[in-house]
Every structure is written in structure tokens, then in C-alpha cells.
Length: 82
Image (cartoon, rainbow, N blue to C red):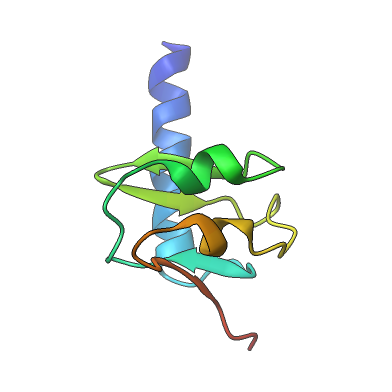
């Protein structure tokens, strides 16, 4: 049962992030090829895989840019602050 609750939370969080409901330094764009290099490089474990793409947890992102540096296709992009 707790797994279903967790999955629901993650899905809601991803939807909120995709709609711009939370601010973060970086976003992972649709050019992501799911190689996983960004997830391994992140010092704060702020990147996770979901629904065929990687995503960033806004509260954990420290704007270090390591994800963008290791990505072979440049999928992580610095998000402009509002």
C-alpha cells in the first residue's frame, strides 16, 4: 500500500515540476537519451528517472551544473529565474 502512495506522490511532484509549480536551477529537457550520467554525477541525489526521462527534485538542486557538464546531448539546461 505504501508503494502506491509513494508512486502517487512522485507522479504529482513530476507534474507540478513540469508545469512550473516549483523553482529550480536546472531542468532536464526532452532531448534526454536516458544514459544516466547526470544521475550518477549529481552530488545531492537530486536527479531521478521517471516515465522515460530524468527529472530534478527542485529542493535538492544546488545549481552546481555537474549534470549539464556530463550530459552527452546537453539535456540539462539552466532554467531562467522568474
